Image (tube, rainbow, N blue to C red; front, side, top):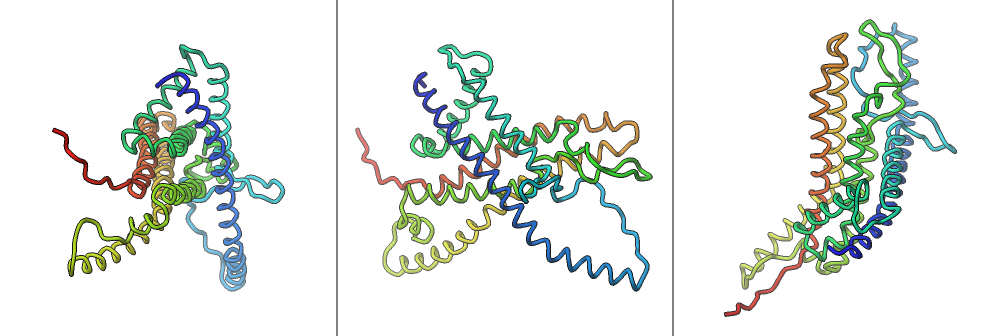
Length: 331
């Protein structure tokens, strides 16, 4: 890959990366607002029912929840918009990546070294890997998304492992120690709002890429048209079968954002819960027991970023690949 091509690809990748980061943070905020609004009415009815029960019977103490809460904690509001601890971490990760890339590429040397060498190695490695999977034509159109989502997820996963994320905040004392109720920071991917936002961004991009590559008619053919050569009654039977399979495929496609988001959220949330459990398992050894699991979570962070990128890349390849006609053999 020539130097001019590398600089051109890097410039396009950075511009598109900034756009995607802004879209992801906006969708994460929107998803959080929708969930917060939908939770208002059940919370109100639950409070009134609780008040009525307290007038009739004495309050019964419930066991305290152990580990991280399943929802991100609201730490403040800006112009009426709720700001959660996971949103703060996602902003820190996005801003840190932007600053790092800007500093690394502010002066492009013919012989790269240091941060520039690392950035070029990372981008070229991801580009070569995806080119072998998707092909030259498709990777040129989609590389900006797949590279960005891999780097962002990996950075967010490792950011969540920094001591203090999820373990510093407001809380109360219990017989078993101090329990954090409202941590100041929370792993970005341990919030389903962010993972769902990234999956929805991919779903929108997937539709655009498919329509650009095969067109509306080709999109429908890819889903419902019979494959292979057939004629007569067999062609009618295959048309019915493939139409039914296409309907199932549409349902599968609609559930892809859900599966992508909950897979990433579930693994990240479980990993951070495991670290917190190990830290509180034996009093006095909370600094030692989680150490082996930290190394495991470093590997899991890479695997989850790679899985998300590969799944989205394969989904794109399946809908955008063109059927090649028979090639003539040359003697």
